Length: 150
Ligand code: FES
Image 1 (cartoon, protein in one colour):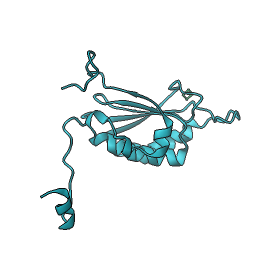
Image 2: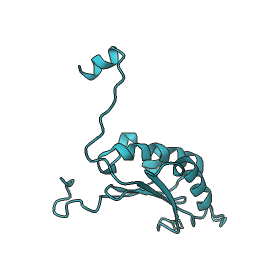
Image 3: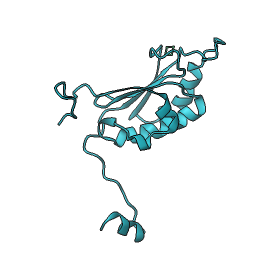
Image 4: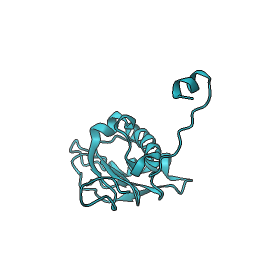
């Protein structure tokens, strides 16, 4: 049965897990040192950390939210990194507490089921598309030609 037929017959489609989804915990690092970009000197990082931790951090060992001091993207507060032991590392800036947290929750859900945590562009919220600072391949990525490891 193809997808169209399954949808027509009302069957629930369950996407099978991809073969290279990250096995380890997803680690969400939130900078608690970030200051507002308006020059006021107000530290915004702790609020971002508390919001992300409340949304993602409690009750599930598969996701760990941790505070960090500076991700070297200080001109684009608030900043957050998402990584895992065998997955991509994403670094985001320009995040607001409310919209950024919602976007990160969705992103982490996609990360956990994507090959090497490489969340497809279409599954990234607009705020994360605009706030993307870096995308770093996993440690065991091929050093020769940059292809995905086998
Ligand atoms: S103070 Fe937050 S990235 Fe540097």
